[in-house]
Length: 157
Image (cartoon, rainbow, N blue to C red; front, side, top):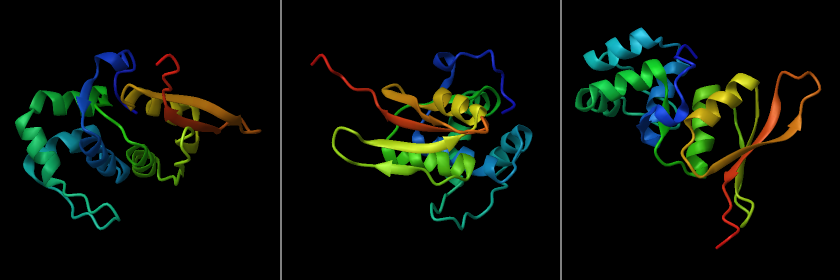
């Protein structure tokens, strides 16, 4: 990630889960920050043939409506306003090309994925409030660990 690592996650601009997926989809195609800023604003957008069928024109409309927010999201990073389990799974799949495991069992809903330390750090920085990322197991090589993303539990209700 080529953003400013000194920007606290709490100080980052907020994107919808869908806006974040659109942005990460273009990044996964090798788009640099410069290309994102230029081509999205100019409407030089590809046609998405993935299972998501992204309509990048929506990202262009967002960039036109909120240019400062869009630029900060691209250059400094962002936090997602509100995540869902399926949205987190999709973000990991789009951003990292991984297929995380979804668990919907009541009381232990989660998304589990093997991530590098850098991927883990970035995932934690973009997740909305209300999610906990815990290490489920360490890999012997130390390059990837299994992480479990789950809703923060409210025990004192």
